[in-house]
Image (tube, rainbow, N blue to C red; front, side):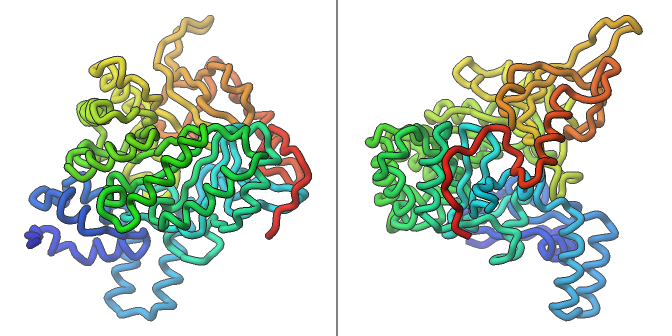
Length: 446
C-alpha cells in the first residue's frame, strides 16, 4: 500500500522521532493500512493513538532531545536523557508498585496485583508487549525497558494457582500485560489448564482477558495460525462453568468498522464468551459525546457490552490527553442520554486512583448555611475497602480539575471520608495496600 505523507508531517519528522525516543511506539500493517486515514494526519484519531505526538513532551523536554539528536549523542548519553524525562512522568500511577502487589509471609508475589478483594491481576511473562501501543497507555513504562524492574511479570503457573486457592474471596482473575493475546494459544492454555484442573480454584467464577487485539489485530481470531486453537481455549473456559469476559479496548468507532474486527467478535461470542468494552476519554481523539454514542451503539449492535469510560490517568503525557472532570461528565451524560437502554451499561467517567475507582456521579449545587455550594458528587465503583463503595461523597467544583488530587472536600471538611483509613492502610509495615485479609500460609517463590 502506498501512503501519501503530508508535507506538514515530513517537515516535523524530527519532532515525532524525538517523542518516540521517550514514549514506546509499535504499529502493524493493519493499523497503518486499515485504521489510519492518512489524508487527515496528523489529526486522524488513530494516528494520534499510535504515533507519539511531539506535544506529549513539554517544549523544553522536546528541545533537549532534539539537541542531543543534532549533536549525534552517544547511545548512553541519549539513554540517560530519556530516562531522566521518563522518571518525571510518574511511570507507575496510583502507586501500583507499592500498594497493589500482594505480599504473603513478607514476600511479594511476582507478576500479580491484588487491589480489590474479589479481583486480582496476573501479568504473564509471555504477554509483555502489544500488537500496537497506545500513546495514552497508563502502562507505557512496561514497554520502555524490557527486562527491567519497570515490568510486572511471572510465568510461575503453580504460584498463580496456589494464590487463587489461598484467597477464597477471589471470584475474578484478569490476565493483562502488555496484552495476553500476543501469546501463542499453547502458552495461554498452560495457565488456563492449571487453573481449571485444580479443584481448589472452584470459587473462581470469572476469567477476564484485557486486550487491545480486537482493535489492533483482529486477525488474531480469524487467520492467525493458532486462531482456532485460541478460540478452543475460550470454549474450554466456558465449558468449565466459568464466565469468560474479553475486556476489549475500543477508543474510537473506526476500530469497530472493519469486516475483520466484526468477524473476530462474532467468533469470540460463538465460544460463549462476552466482550466488554472500555477506554479512556482522550482529548483530540474521542472527546466528543457523538463519538462515544456512536461507539456504544456499534458495540451493542455487535453483541458487546459497553462497560467503562475512564479518565486519563496521572501518568505519561497526561497534560496532552487529559479532559477536565467537568467536561468529562458532560460528555458522558450527553452520550449516554442519546443511546438506548441496552447501551447504558457504561459506568463513568471513572478515575482509577490509588484508593479505588471513583466515578463522577453528578455536578450539583447544594444549599448550605453559608450559601449555595457547587459540588462534584462522587462514589467508589471499586475500593480497597469494599465498604467505601456504599458512600457518596462531595468535592468542591473546580472546572479545571482533571484528577482526584486536584479535588478538595466540600462543605468545609478537611479531608474525604476514606482518607484517614487509607493513610493508615498504606503506612502499615509490609502493607500492600489491602484491607481484606490474605488467607492461608503459602510462601511466594521469588
